[in-house]
Length: 446
Image (cartoon, rainbow, N blue to C red; front, side):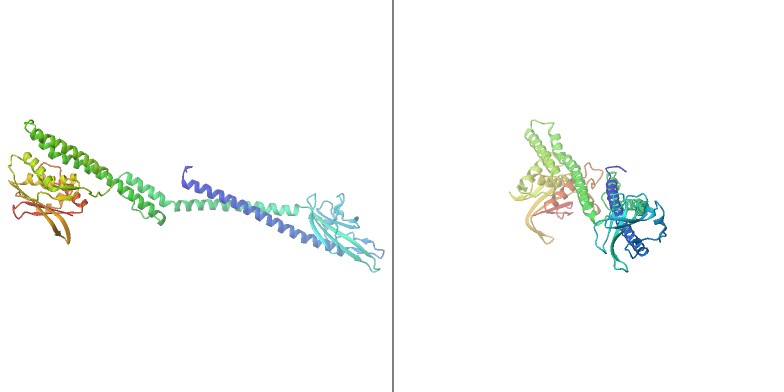
């Protein structure tokens, strides 16, 4: 597992937290157990002190008498770890046989009936108990009974607890680490799923993140999908605009080709077409760099555009001797980019000239209503050609598809027209020309 992995970092962090938690638990438990053991030892020493008190006797002279046999055999065995002392007025009057050779334990100042439990400098637990004793002769004596036990009793119990506690805490810690690892694997599975889906998208096996992700990752997946779609749309637009650029230059190049043989007579036409090609290049580059739908803020005279395009196409199709019938106003201003209007009118007229026999009709009507919408302009372009078969109409609006594969072309002209009219908020309709019998295209613009 790599050190930069999120799973590795979480596992290490949780491992450190568990280690600190278990260390704190061990310390608290050991301290609590030690205090409990010390309390139990105090109670035991209290009982030992009571036992010594019950075994002791005070004679008529006020002297303390202790029996040779004590209730606990450890008090009679030297070095047993349990020691007993009796003092009177800070002077030792008795010590158990087990305390032979030990330094006297000096008790603190105590009042009769009081007791104190301490740990001395040698590490022994000591209980001092002060009593006031009166014999039958009414002689009163004050004694301090001291019982001490080595710390081995408590230390042994604490060590046993430590061994048991550390063993089980280690086992529990290892188990919890494995459980945490399994939970991390399960919890981070959606992230791994997103990574795999992104790799599949990169390899072309998928188009979008379409997996079932947790609620917390749905926003991320949605944003990534939006980004992927946006970038894919940009790439598609770049490709389409390059194709559009090539298609847009086709007509000016054809005109230039026809003017080459007699350049001196067509110098003005050549200059006009070169300027037009330069405008086309700039226009298509602007479209390729556009972030989204553009809105026209300029006006263009459709009548001028139509006349210019017809003048150019008359030279391209001079062999056909096409008769152009124009029913258009002297001036017709619409809100549209000039390049867009040249693309729309140029492609429609070029197709009409290509497919017609002898006649092309162009008409403009204003303030028309269609599909419960009001449109400012209706442009109709008709020809006397064979028209488009009914089943082919929707297909030719798709990029790269032509009505007749035997006729030279790129198959993108009508797609460009359809996309531009849609961006302008207009409507494109096709049908049969009632006047000429060929194809009729109707362009509605707001």
